[in-house]
Image (tube, rainbow, N blue to C red; front, side):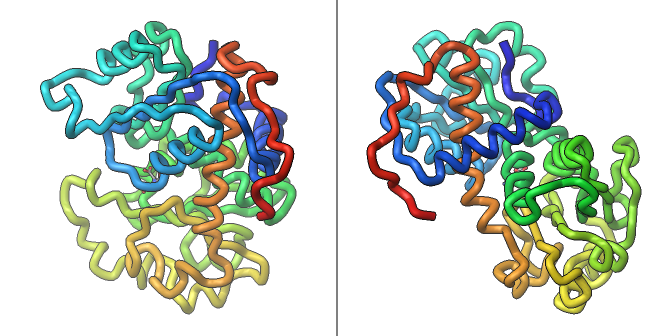
Length: 309
Ligand code: NCD
């Protein structure tokens, strides 16, 4: 059985089906005729991803188990593995995991018999963020073919960069990177362009947060980072007419992006967050159905649509 670990495990058809399911959830109320428990095991800080998963689970009628590393037996030294085994034993039906290790799932995947969703693995992968980013771009252009998309910023330390670059390429987009010296990740095979070229050529600019917590020391170039490598108001004016701005957030306002651009017309940053709930609902039901934990009959459409968005 598949755990959802990487965006690259999905085919193009599967990604498109997830978008359709997510759109369906956007406008439809649900009633789950089954008791199902979800545990969200976040070993790294999170605002959006964790809350988005909780809302997705509650909208699906699932019961969300309480877990915080600070008040759990993790404080007594319990490992991710033993924590996951515990939730499996007491009856959780789904684990959502974020951990600082790039490969936290390696030890777990053969030994945990309930589905797991990767909510962030070190600097390696963040597949649900990737899907919500893809969905936001797809809403705009209805295709990925020949779109020019640039991922800008701290590529070396960002799990979002890696997930997105390969998925976008598989979907037919032309992907570029733009990074300050030292923030590149040359093991990922994508061409680098300057921020000037990026704003002039690309249909979507995906900014990344500078991941201070993953740096050994503050790089000298951080002093003039926005001016030299970030999205300033001047550069925003050079963007193509229909080009959009994305950022997974949290945002370092005034570092990778001028604060005034966060909510500008081109920005899809809050749309990304909204989409995150629906795509996560689609991912959760997809995996629970694939594992035979949830079947179609247990979800009943409410008679009236609850949202007109
Ligand atoms: C990202 C993450 O945690 O990887 N945020 C998120 O999940 N929305 C990006 C980041 O922390 O910079």
